[in-house]
Structures are given as structure tokens and as C-alpha cells.
Length: 258
Image 1 (cartoon, rainbow, N blue to C red):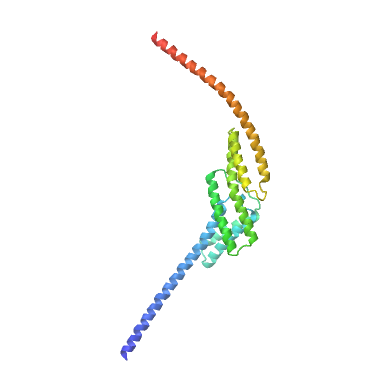
Image 2: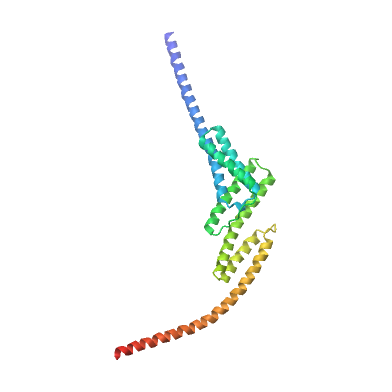
């Protein structure tokens, strides 16, 4: 009988030990999942804020800026409610200020992209925003019409980045009195606009840019004609200089012999 009791006690202790170990493992797993959940909320919010800061504000209309700002606020709010923390509270306050700014400011200053490296960075961030909007729609957090409107904006912004780079290069060439090069850049502008003008958004700009190209090509033709004339004069001047040097060398030799 005593052996049965001993066996029962041993089994009870073993089961108890197993239960304790299991409980600790479950608690640790829950704790790790909670930490990951908090980090995920914070990372998503900060990444979204980063994208909003890196993408030129004039690429996004007020509705999209408000939507993105509100998404950041919601993410930080969820993080704070799950684990109240002073640092998260500060992030939440900053996000609310960002939302207030987006709500009050309908118009934003347009600062064009002027170099290809910046354009590539912006285009990469636009792709990430495109992915974010698509996920929001798949999770049924925004309507089909809203998602389509936002995605259309992002596609147009994707085109606008390279257009702005070409326009900047064209203006630079004009300042440097290089009309032929400027016309080449503006033709690239027309090409990019033409490929994305299904809705007629770029029609007026295309016509205005074509007119400017015609003016520049006319100016380039006159410039080339003038350069040819100057080139002939330059060749004549070069020959005269060479003759002067030759005569000078002969004179120096004569001085030595004398």
C-alpha cells in the first residue's frame, strides 16, 4: 500500500512539475508575442511617418495625407493602449499634431525633384505607399473607390518624379545657353507625359512643352550657324597664331646664331 502511495506522490509531483514548466513556457510565449505585437505596431507607424516625410507633399492630396496621418495615430494609439509608455505617448502626441497639420493645410508648397538619385528614392517610397494602400483595401479598411483614388495619385506621382528631373535638366541647359540639349530633355518630358496621358491630365502641358521645344530648336539652329561662322574665323585665327609662333621661333634662332 505504501508503495502505491509513494508512486502516486511521485506521479503527482511529476505532473505538477510538467504543469509548472508548461505554464511558464506559455507565459513566456505570450510575453514574447506581446512584445512582437507592440514592436510591430510601432514599426508600422514609424515606417508610415517616414514615407510621408520622404515623399514630396505635393504628390499627395489632402485626403491622402489625412488618411495616412490618421493611420499613424491609430497605430500608436493601439500600441499605447496595449502597453502605456511615456515614449509611446510622445510618439502618439507627435502623430496627432501631424494629423492636425494635414487637416488644416489643404495646399502645400511644391518642391520639385531635381536629380535622378532623389527621384529613385521617392519612387521606391511611392511603391511602399502603393503596397500599404493595397493592404488597407484587402483588409477592408478603405472602400474600393477610395483605394482607386489613392492608387491613381501614386501612379501619377511616380511619373511626375522623372518628369520633374527632365524639366530641371532642361532649365539648367537653358541657363547655360545650350538650347539643343534643353530641347532633348523637354522631348523626354513629352514622351513621359504622353505615355501616361490616358485621362488627358497632361494634354495642356504637352502642347506647351512642344511649343518650347520648337523655339529651342530654332534657337539651336541659329546658334550652330553662328558657331560654324565663328569656327571658320577661329580656324583662321589659329593659323595666324601658329604663323606668329613660327616667326617668333625663327627670330629666336636667328638671335642665337648671331
